[in-house]
Amino acid sequence: MKKAQISILFFIILIVLSLDPALAYEEAYTPPVLDVEVPGSVTPNTDVSVRVTVENATGTRMWRSKVYLDLNSMPSTIKQYLQFYETEEHLTKQREAAGEKDAMEPGEVITTTFRIKIGKETPALTIPIYVVLETEIGECEEGCAPYFRTFNAEIVVIRNDPNLFLVLDVDDIVLEVGDCDIAKGSFAISYVIQNSSQSTAFNVNVYVPTPPVPLSINITPQMPLTSLKPGEEKNGIFYATTGNLSPGSNVIPINLTYADYYGKQFSTSASFTLSVVGNAYELYSQANLDLDSCEYESATEGFTSAMDIYLDVGNVEMVNRCEEMLAYIMAVNYFSTAQDNFYSGDIDAARGNYQIAKGHYMEANDCTGVALCEKGIDACDEANQGGSDSSTNDGGISALDIALIIVIIALLGILVMSRKR
Image (cartoon, rainbow, N blue to C red; front, top):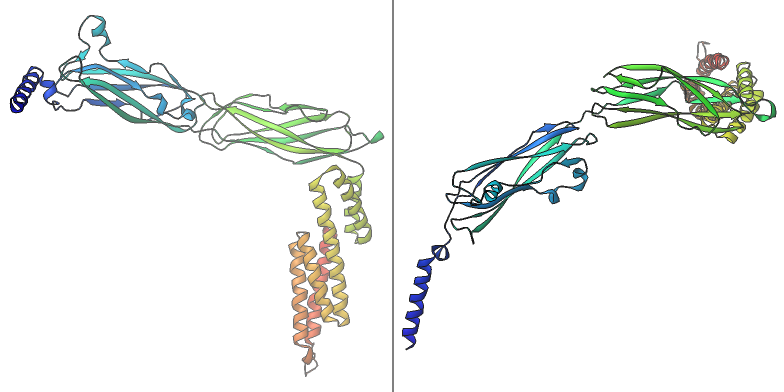
């Protein structure tokens, strides 16, 4: 009895499969062809077309076919620069609207286009484009095999940004206070704008944002400039008039803005320091005169007093200058002491003082002084080596005398140098 039931069940299954061949096996087919065309490279502020072509190469029908842009897979950092006019297209929707079957016949080819706006602010980057094809394959309208495929393409955004520089002829403006410890005056700063890039800059504008102190500025030539071509330079002047200023130091920024061909804005800046001091300049100038006259004590007092004032207002550049001049005076003093030591025959003391003088010359950025000290050190070493044979047998000049002459010549050189500073 059981064998008869099994035979009947098997016979029923054969009849059902014969009525619907689609249940008996999955018919093999060739995948459809998906082709995407995009421009290899574009510039910002451009409309681009993504051309999508679908060919039914399966040998059977394709139902409810659609293509779309997969925006979820695109990074948001890139997507923010883009505007999408179309994102999805049903390939046979017109047939469905006309009451026909929503299917692509074997061998049929359909092309559609998506448009994308590349924003003017888009930097140089590569835009990944993901195009998806969704369809169902088979002769039957219902229960066909689903098909899904993604095609990747890339669009390269090329951007040759203009590169402009703003250069000032001075970094520091110093005003002296007058009555009631108030400064008021005028000054001018020359500037140059340089386009060092291979593209033209447009709407070039130089201006001073709201300054931290009362300051009226007039800029020539009149801004903004229409354009600045590659390699071109433009010279101008800032004419400034101050209001009542108290002692102190303020950084004044000067901004340069410009745009590229597509309207993207760029900016850079330069700055100068506006310092208001008491009698620091007078002290500094008099100290230089004292130094030229070899009045080292007076020069030291002057540079020290000027440096204290510059420290109070935060004028770092002038503080550094005063420190260099003080180091120079120390170097000259130690050099002179080394000369006296050498002349008196105290070679070891001379060598030590030459070494100290050399260090101060290095602080003063005086390479000539450093070189003279090195000659003095060499003379000391030569004198020490020739100490046991300090004179020649025939009455000639001793090694010590030769070394001393070398150092005296060096001293004459350094005295000339000090008077020239």
